[in-house]
Image (cartoon, rainbow, N blue to C red):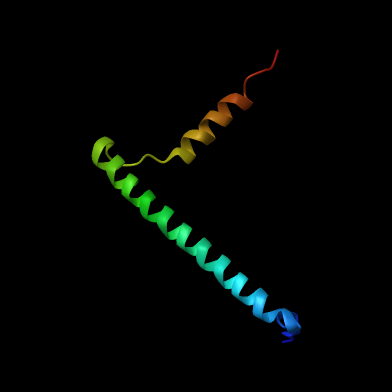
Length: 71
């Protein structure tokens, strides 16, 4: 496989650290958000019970709207 597109010549010292910094920043943001989401999910489940599957509810709502005539 040809990896010449990964060689940036004299700009390697600037481009690769920027790529690495961006990737690590996005990864840290994802992990932080995922951790907060799991915490909120546990809090929700403890307060309201099991999470309902909303995909089926949405599809039933769409079916109901599709069968209604528009005036």
